[in-house]
Amino acid sequence: MKKYMYRSLLSFLFSALFWQQTLAQKDTSMNFSLKQAVEYAKSNSYIVKNAKLDEKNAKAKVKETLATGLPQVNGAVNFNKNFQLTPFYFNLNLSSFTNSLTPAYEALLKGGLIDTATLLGLSSSPGEKGSVTRAGANITGNANITVNQLLFDGSYLVGLQASKEFVKLSQQFSAKTEQDAEINVSKSYYLVLIAEENISLLESNLSQLEKTLKDTRALYVNGFVEKTDVDRLELAVSNLKLQRDKLHDQKEIATKLLKMQMGIQVNEPIYLTDKLEDLYKNNLVLTEKVTPNPSNRIEYQLLNQQVYLNKLNMKRYRTGFLPTLSAVYNIAGSSYRDANFNPLTKFGWYSSSFVGVSMSVPLFDGFRKQSWMQQTHITLDKLENDKKNFENAVALETYQAQTNYESSIKQTEIRKSNMKLAENIYASVSAKFKNGVGSSFELTQAETELKTAQINYLTAIYDLMVARIELNKALGKPVLN
Image (cartoon, rainbow, N blue to C red; front, top):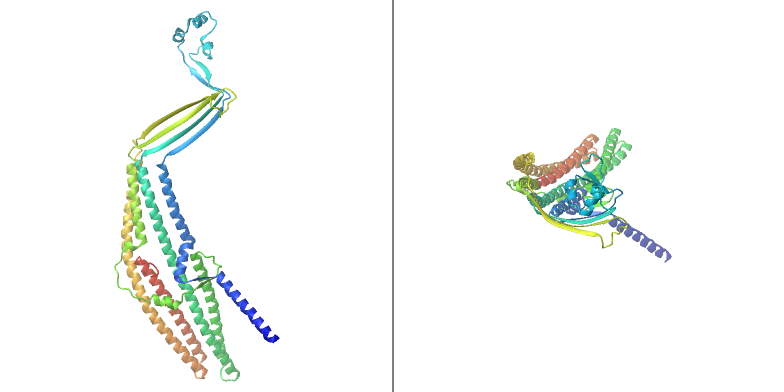
């Protein structure tokens, strides 16, 4: 009874440990189908994130441009302690000044009891025609608020329209970035699955060859085969193990590349849920001959948007010849004290205000705007050439992609048939060798041919799926149909 309870307790502990490890693996690993990997990359790829940030930046630029046409309110406050008052120069006509004096001051001047400079508080030197005095307060304070409002500016109106179109351009760039991420993630996903399948096939071949080597060693001990047969098989097994290790390294590199393109830390574990055979069958769909349509391509849409933006730029330069109209309102207060200045006192502040309208008319800028317009014309001509060249390139790309895709389907079927033949040859030669009527050289040669046929078949599958991606891209369709 105790023995039974001990076994039950031990079984329970092992089960608990197993489920704990299983849950830990589920918590620390992420499972992705091809579609899920692509969608994850669109949200988490650092390149895509930067493209999304560019979108936000473009929208912020619109607000920045819009702010120029809104009221601009500025305030200023300053206080000054004057250690020396500001001097002022006076050039007086003393004869006309003395004629306006009262009789009492005139009598003092005539009697020589006071001079004109003393009367005015001026200082002068002999021979000078004018006089200098100082005026002002020891402590001054000023405060003002100014409101400026743009009433009309043709360049501003066009610039506001262009900034909104720039947002659309940034969104198109973001869509192009997402498309590139979709293509790169798909190709890397296929590479990992190809590496896994290649490893699986090689492990199967290695297992068979190791069994044959074991049997051959037994035959050699009993004197039925030569040492050379054992050596050839040992060499073949060693080469397969080296290739297996190399394939594991390649798979690891391909997996890390996939994680980097998805925006996952390269050391984080992931698991791919799609099977190579299923993805391969999904790509075996022949398409009819299609007419290339450049307007479906995001690159063509980007070119059109750049053309439109440059036309708006041309319009902005033309409106630069129109006058600019703006309004201003200002309210200010000033205070003056010789001593004991208190900025909070309500006495001694003198207010002033004004409202005005100003108009700026461009008369001559040295032909700067004409030069800008000429440069924009050249840019437009280049963009039109780029569009025509892209239309021609899309026609070629579509034809080439469809031809490669159809050829890849045929090549895949042929290489699949060749792999089946190589498997049959290997099985036949292996049977003959085991029955003592074949040589180890024929066996290792058949094994090499089988391995080559398997690699060629897997390469054909990868080429087929990549060809499908390139065809969808050429047609302006989603990469994953």
